[in-house]
Image 1 (tube, helix red, strand yellow):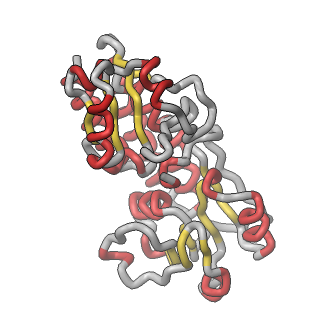
Image 2 (tube, helix red, strand yellow):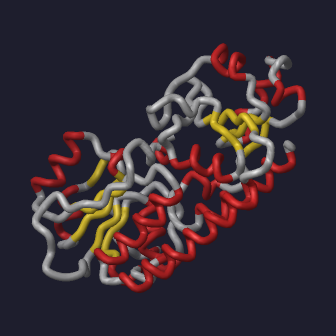
Length: 270
């Protein structure tokens, strides 16, 4: 569930220590999505460490691990002598942020809550790691694709969608989460868009009252429980679906491919 908590704040990319004189050359990524963004920028050779917890591409197979996102190995991290740390803001507790600041290593944080923010974050990261031209080019391509999708689906009948993150307890996504924006791009609306938390807990009763036309699930195992509520429009129409691509839950450039698949899936419900 934590991988979804990436959209509470507007996009923010800043250094918490003194800025470096030039581009960072030794980078440790504290989030798999940010590792993907480094690869998309062609900056794999600047990565000297990553966190465990996600499948690695072959090019990073031998890269040292610095622990997991919730249990960093600070001694290992320091031994790698990085000149930049990358992190998602929402994944850092106040104590973890202070701990990293005390290390004296510049910390570059991101918190995109929309696809536009994500494109801007890629541009900013490119500048920070000496890949400005690549970042600007990819960011512009990303923005054009997002705009094309918005134009394609903007006149479609709006669909009310419930996105389930976890089942016990029942968690969903708030409106300030990047996947909520992805739903809007596809001409749909998160029925809990009015909630500010990135992943608020909700009740079955609240879902029944919202009566979504589509229920989207993070895993197929979550589907069976909804058959107990045949009064739901999504159940009646057999539109309780697993998301078509898990990349939807990893904010990097590849997310847009997953959004395109989501749009096509939601079009079936119309």
